[in-house]
Amino acid sequence: LALNAMLNIQVLSTTQGLPSAFTQRYVSDERGKAHYYKLSELGYWINLMGGICRADVVHFNSLFFLGSLVGIPIAFLKQKRIIVSPRGELFEHAIAKKYWLKSLVKMLLQPFGPWLNFHVTSEVEQKVILDSFYVQQSITVLPNVFETTHEFPISLKRKSFVFVGRLN
Image (cartoon, rainbow, N blue to C red; front, side, top):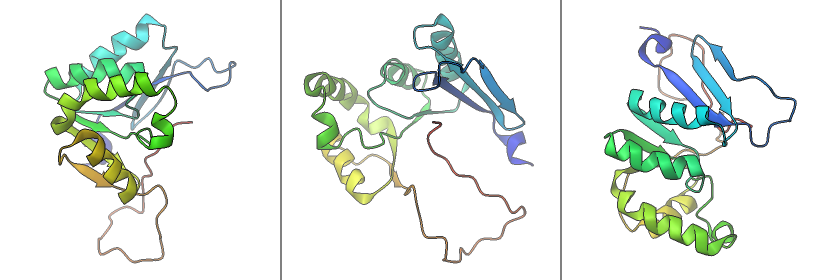
């Protein structure tokens, strides 16, 4: 089976940080669809709920984003596999900005800790996650940049690689 026949990939993003001239509602190809909304639009929230209900795995690219704060408890209640990529948000210098609000959010999310799977980019960030959530949950360390001079002992049917990162 082709990868796109096995997976249905949907991305829900906001237009925050995009040029004001950006008017596309979605980008689509054979691999899936990416939806773009203003956070204040009802469509964002409808697609967030629908996406969580249809998905097997839900990936959140932030802990302190309103969509994540609403989506994580819903994904938990719907018994979905949850992956979080905090992207350095839990480092001390990042927590220092809006400290009280972020401390409250961390406290509210801590009960979900055992059900969260984290993607981090370094062992230092892994330690920060362990210190923040006080449990030995699933943490995968996958650096943003890695050495490609090594040979990998796998065989490939297609010469295709996938890089997963932020959509900026």
